[in-house]
Length: 382
Ligand SMILES: Cc1ncc(COP(=O)(O)O)c(C=O)c1O
Image (cartoon, rainbow, N blue to C red):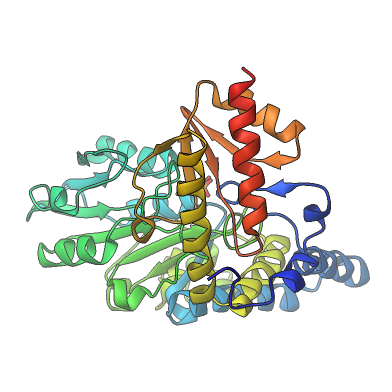
């Protein structure tokens, strides 16, 4: 397969940044498209025209929840909206009962720090943290088995590792958690938009993501799926008026709980971000997640083989079926290398000891080759 199943050139024409550089930092921030820009302008126009158009704005937030629900195979009523994935994890943590028999939180060694910090912070509430170790830039699914037991409240397993794109078998982990009576939390920030996700197939209890990476959106908005069968048993104390049965009752004396996942909502949602997020998710839906994944495998293969041919040191697995297209190479000074590559028109993403190259559905094989040439040249020139 040398071309994707969709019209690559047509999509590329909708991303102005491609006229001046090669974005390979989708694991960090997606480029702007004509659609996401138009969505932001629609909000600005509405604000300017009406002063406030509350009903339309709330409808837009609901549509963004719908778009997320559709991408993950859930119902819109299973979705809550947040400002960040960290805030979503905090709300989940606040719903855990940690002073009973279940005090253990099992945390994968590949959580994004913001999520890991939320679980660490629960130690003050009595939580006992267990960390699943990293092995050769990945995780052995069996390593969960000994750690998940009848005292486990929650298992947190990031779907795709932000460092090198390694994808965990979250279906297996969620099943193991469920069998022990524990809940499962999955951060899908690095996978949604890059890997087809169906929460019912995965069997997870919670799945959170933001939109600025492979969903082609912006910061300041994140979504949380809550498995409908458990919603009524959860009472998040990180809450607010949007978590009520009827927020517009303005009843400050009663703490009731919305019957659906909106019981996890808190304050006024980020309306402008909802406009942009929905437009970004619509792109992923239109291109088609399965076709994106197929192209990502081609790009990942090219990157791994091309990196090897240029003497670059791969971080993590070379099995494309176990990773996203994000590919990390170990480098001497990642930040200096990022700066040097940017000066040459390639946008990589530095993290610690690696440079991450994270293409997306609009990336060509020529882009990959050019990014690899640039990385190899920059390392050589040091
Ligand atoms: C896997 C993953 N989780 C979470 C985050 C950040 O989440 P938040 O919305 O809390 O900033 C990132 C990246 O910034 C990420 O890569």
